[in-house]
Structure formats: C-alpha cells, structure tokens
Image 1 (cartoon, rainbow, N blue to C red):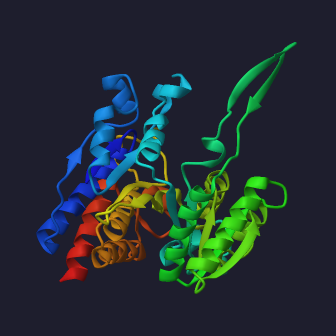
Image 2 (image 1 turned 60 degrees about the vertical axis):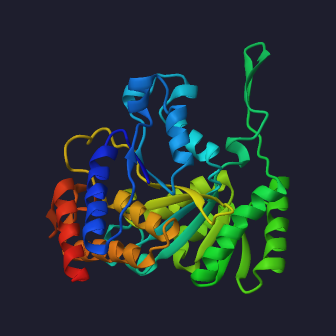
Length: 364
C-alpha cells in the first residue's frame, strides 16, 4: 500500500492511520508492505510538480493508494496546470480510477449535527457512485477563446461513450446487490443528449446483467431536491462526473460533517483479480488548522477501512474499525469540528488513542 499524506492536515490524520495499521499487524496478523511518498504542494516544494512520474509508477504497482489531502493557499497563485490538485487528478486519470464511491452515513451519535431534522437522517446510509474520468471535466474541446471586441467564450464539453457508462454502471449494480438491491441512476436526459445515452446504456446493463436489482431513474436536479427532502429513500445512486460531484457533496452535509466521510476510487479488475484503487477522505487540507493537532482523523481512518473492504477483502477488519469509531463517537469524545454541548473535546492524537483502546476492547 502506498501512503501519500499530502498537505495541510493530511500528515496528521495519516499518522493516526499508521497507528491503526500497526495495531492490525500486532493484533490481527494483517501485515502490509507500506511505502510513503509525496503528492500535492509538498511535491511542488521539493520537485516543482504536484506528482512525479516515479510516484505514479509506484501507485500503478500497489494494491491500494491511501491519500491524505492536497492544496493550500501557499500554492494558490500557481498556474492551473501545476496546482497541487493536479497531482490527485493525474493519479485518478493514469490509474483509470473511473468509479468514485462516496458513502453518506449518519452515525447515531451525530444525528443532531446534521442540518436536517433528526427523523430525516437517523439511520441514513447512502452510497453514491460517481463516474470519475469522463464527462465535462475531461471532454474536448475545452478552453477559453477570444472572439474579439472584448468578448471571450469559455468551452467545456460533456461527452460519454458506451464503455464509460457501462463500466461505472456495473460497479453501482454490484454494490446495490450487496446492499438493499436498489439503484437510482441520475442524469438530465430531458435536456442533454449525453443524458439520453447514459439512461439507455444503464437500462441495457440492467436488463442483460442485473435484473435482480430494482432500477429507477431521476433527473439530477430532482435528485438534489430529494436528498434534502427525504434522503433515506436512496440506497445506491449512480451518476456522471459533474452531477456526482454536486450530489455527493450535498449528501455529505446530511451527515453533519465532511470530516467524517471517506471515499474510494476504483478501476477495473485485472486478469489477476486485482483492482487499482485510491482511498481518501472527502474533506480538504484545512490549512487553517494544520499543525495544531486538532484535526479530525476519522475520515482518513475510515478510508483505510474502505481499503480493507474493497482492495484486500477484509470485511471483518473493516467492520471492526467502523464499530470502534461508532463506539468512540457514542461515548462523547469529539474533535472540534463535531463538538456539541455536553461532549468532551479531544485532539487528533487523543482521537487516535481512544480508537485504538476501543479496538483493543471490542476485539478482546
């Protein structure tokens, strides 16, 4: 496994993950070959680019990449092509990580932290599958052109092919089979030809490969409204790059804190049954609190749990970590981002300490 702590609070959160990796080796006989390297602003500072070819090659040859966070104001004035975020985008593109899995789970202890009424989010457990390497973020032509007379035009192209749609749909259908058996596909087929193609191809995959899954369709704007009206109607959502970006952030805030949510980005399964994968927290680098030992490491820890589940076929170990996190939250121990009245505020390191003690307790 390749660890890329990145910028801001990334290294602090990743330190707590390394402690849990060590705990797994000691207590569960689960040993990982670990390597660590640079991505984002720290790579720019050392190498002049957000990720080197050597790091990308490492990522190509491991079972999973665990990334902290990238970016910060220090690098805001750089050209777009060399900003820290380009390192993450290159990893996604070069590893062909086309399926982004974003769970939105509302922990019982954090129901009151959501902006929605408790009855709307209690027990919430949604999985959003976002297509990650196509669509309007990568389509050509793109750019800004000068039309003369002080007029400019910005161009981005929304484009999808049959294979791009079918492969992400398969991931979503497979996840739905392992959950509640329901999948909602979101697009804008009413106004976009790419949406029409998306819907037609998802239907084909459903009819030929996954008839046991209950498939429905929803326009993306309606899906955004439904997420804040009645979010528990959803089980798995599959959608394109642009709409997935928006809907997954919308769903994330239903849970009360971006600091709690992990994500996985998956590629195809190769002939040896291995699948390239990148795991990272949803939150950013939070440079305003970096280095203060107050960041919430839970999203990065849960990203490691996702790696155990999807890359290493270790669901019991993943369940163990998730249960430990749930128990710690229920005990009232909180970092500052999820603090509320009557709770005890703790540091990043203390959160790691308490989760490790809980792992000892529940695995005894």
